[in-house]
Length: 204
Image 1: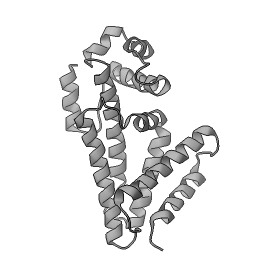
Image 2: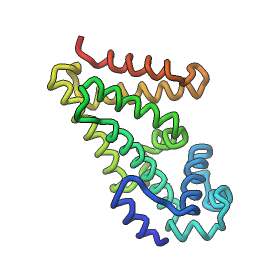
Image 3: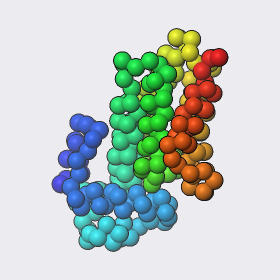
Image 4: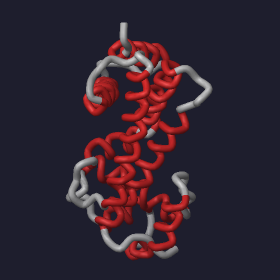
């Protein structure tokens, strides 16, 4: 498959169907970028980890920068779809908040490498404008949601980016505490996390 064909698929939908070798390359790149960092991970190492010939990578990606952008994009689109799918117009505002928040938590713990990677690489200069736009779309969706809660008198006053930063920081903190063994991820922790998050932003 040519690189432009993959770009076309990414532009058409957020749920991406990948060829087996393509998937293995992206997954191996994700694992190594998290374990070793982007700069310390080489294409031959990624190819070996994916169990493909070194030259196979170039059938799908022009270079390592192209590859890391695709890894970021595939996983960011997965997160975007997860968050947006959690919203249900037939639910109350609080129910939607809880659905979106648990969706984010579940994404973090079911996709731990992807979550770590996205948090480590969100500001890197090699990210394309197209990828940064995906991040902006997620933020726009969440900002609108927060402002709607404020409009309905359910959410505390304050800049939406500030409130989102506090909520996002909570998820990152919970994730790190679980990884350190300070907390255990289970249904009780999930419920407690959602309750604390809601209580931190709802108007009393």
